[in-house]
Image (cartoon, rainbow, N blue to C red; front, side):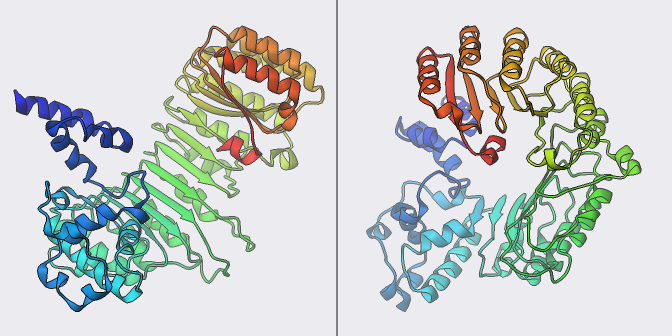
Length: 485
């Protein structure tokens, strides 16, 4: 029976592994809870919401594992050796560890010494220690790595089970060649792209993966010119993984050097297994033939910045009815969109016809009667909708606000918890109060807006009144960028 209780507790605590605060509290309940929680906390001890720059206890535990030869070496004269070194640890903490985060480890090591050379030597010893103590690694972040850990004794046995890798393109190609030789079962790969030239070792690492399911690339360039196309070879390597890839996420930087991501269009036609498609900060235009090939029957999250509503409508129509999130960014649509009325009407129709499970949605449409009729149909059809972003260009703001209030009161789904209003869309204080009064029997609502008019005294008094009544959970005026993200 005690083993059964411990097994059940373990399953419960594993569900809390992203809730560090709760897990830390569980440590204090009793010995059984503590013994059950420790392996979960130490599975990835670098991911908790704590200040690692000031964690002397964590530093002390790690240092205590070093051999006596290391502790007695000349380096000890210039590093902090804590008193805990002579105490017996309650648990073999590092034996539970299944991850390395180089950035966090370097911060912890800096507690012992500020001398860069001594930090380098300590890093070397601690990586060697981890290779000995940890039976396998599932997650590694090597963004600031200085040591070729794949050459350490026991590295092959520990690293061949690696499932998730976070890295950046400043790391030399030879390092990725070394990883590619061992790590061929990576399922989740996150790349910070810091150099505007191709990293051939990283391309090789992608090519050698057998079951890559999640790929994320985020530009973080220093100001430098394009030396060579930093994306093409990566995208072509990804295309070979189309049968396995479920999640494709790319955040591009706007740079002073215009770059047209033309290779993406061709590559996207191959990823028919995608569940997540997010492409930020770049303009993408599809040919008619390419649009026909954008068929994602398993797609759940769809977000491509600056694609047209017509192209988005085609992707939605070709999806399999599983979409839960559609967040297109409409920041600059008013400057270049010629056929907003017809395309936005068609876009709304495609959503209520093909997205019965939609939970988060952004919409742009003019304030015409036809658009409001389709919008109300969408609200009635999409009962799982929780978060709604609206951008409604209008001339008569008060009349439009009054019509929108009526529609939301009549037809908003009961699951709706959040509404975001983009740009200068305004409710009069009268219309806003009417809306609040009729929302009082529903779950509390969060409203975000980019219009500063709501910071006025009359509006603030009204908002505070309905916050106290439990109608409004939060009402915030913020920048347009924060309204979207």
